[in-house]
Length: 471
Image (cartoon, rainbow, N blue to C red; front, side):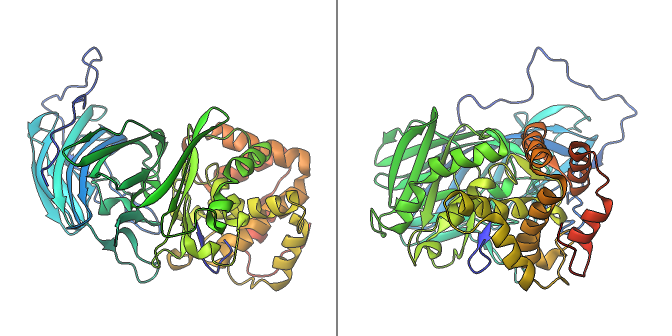
């Protein structure tokens, strides 16, 4: 993510083909009389945000069949959630904000559900033993709206004059579908969004067929790589969509009809393939099966976000002309933050530090200021009392995470040398592709790649409150 100023109505029938339970040829664990079923936790236990997400299960995929009417602002449909129990579950929670579940089943059998704030508490007809795969199907409806957060900024569903969009970090997904809303539980996403004919829908992943019937069109999108929930997006409205192929992958670029067809935002996003190709030389192969970007012309979006495979950019970044730095930043997140995701929010510098450094690398590659020059400018003006390694919840989008995070990456490069640094970066993105990581794991990998004890280095750069020495 880069924020402006940092630099940085019928409900659809249940979808055919939704699975219930696991493969019938695969034996399922069965309960014994002594099984002690317990409720799953109502939070994932993140040190910064203990109530984000939930415990007791691991989601494999979300399959959504939704219908949205821009005239009324109403959303309705079904969510099929395939998951595996990680404990003996008597009940479990999903995050669902401002929307009402009207019917819930677990493996095709009716389940009890209650709403407790922004939590949907589901009690199946019988307990789910640890290790068992199950499918929860939730039929729901309502008028989606934002999650309010005074410290971090509001996130989630925004109704617009011609449609809507769902975007935000660290929370967003629960405003439009039931979800385990924490990045530690990555899952695939399929979306079938039905809207009136003539309205466009953008989302993550590979575009599919667009059947129309009775004045409504269903847009299909599919993200096959596991994705942190805050990276899921849907953008609905009037857009010029350009679909092409780049390196054998679909490249989907969308610019609002309210903006010039050949304006600075369109020109900037047209460079997406070129910038991706350069970053691949630095970070390793591009990790997803589609690419592109979406610009939104909405005053509430004063940031850009690395929504997986297709970043979303607030128009604010292009008011003064083309801006390739922000494109490089969000595309770098496809490696750092999306493919290789956080296990806990405290370690967000791993996302933003590398994305900031990608801006510096692109600047140097383009013949502008070098990475070293940009490092020195930041180094000479930074407030070192702000630390990136443990920024505290209210500062996860602060300058320490971005600028000091970027400086840490450059200082590491200078400390261990280019050969070890780029070997580290490429092995890190390869070894942890589609996974979750921590700072401690990165430090261990850096020491292995460099064959150096980097304890003092990381202590100074990530946690120290005095200016660290330049390598």
